[in-house]
Image (cartoon, rainbow, N blue to C red; front, side, top):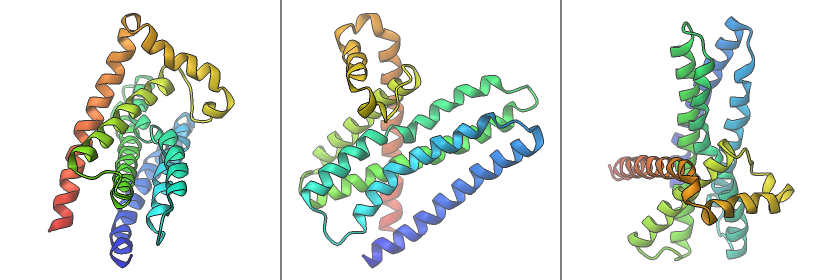
Length: 222
């Protein structure tokens, strides 16, 4: 527990620095331009923190029951795509004027990278919880689990960005959401653009996550 807390202390400082960077860039933009359009990034970042906080709370417990892990894990999975979803906010750069395009690119990138970092940290922690429960017995199953989750994130990002569904719709409009999800599989050839987006996002997340994991493991062992 002490080692976990020390690791978290360093991690919290990193997240605090990234979050402060986001707010400073956003605050300066609003101060100079008197334009509050980009405030939606704050809400999106809040949603990115949700899966991280859910799993971090479990990691600080002395023991985690199977029921608690399943319930929390289900909620975590529903919210997890919100973390890498921030990458797709880069589409809003097209609204920037030529004088602001570099600044707004850095602004959105700061939020995007923070969200990506939060998502990767929570996936790392969930993996560790499942290892401790002996649900992931070896490296092969760890890789299958992590890659599958990142594939689902790519799918979830498409549902959110293109079809405009959000996490709350799982409860509010489950039937309509289910029909849209199934339609992608029933008519795959007429949904080639959708599958290209899902595949490219998923591949990006998988490659970057494994780079993150290798760097994290190297840092831990040194």
